[in-house]
Amino acid sequence: MQMVLLTALGVGGATVLGALLGFATKKISHRFSDIVLAFAAGVMLCAAVLGLVIPSLEYGGKHGI
Image (tube, rainbow, N blue to C red; front, side, top):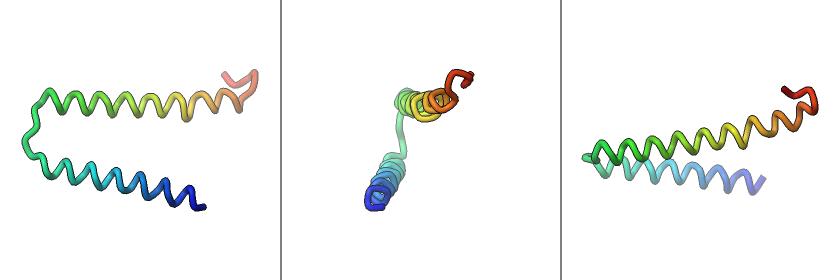
């Protein structure tokens, strides 16, 4: 339970920090915005593959596909 609470506080704190940085910087370049969005898309793709697809194939056994 303690690990879940620490993880939730870490994720929530990172979200608040990111929101504050977003409100603090009003004018960012289009290129920087593209870089940040591409990084976020890569992180989400990695999370989907490593966190969802691979365990589902492991749980499915030899008939998983």
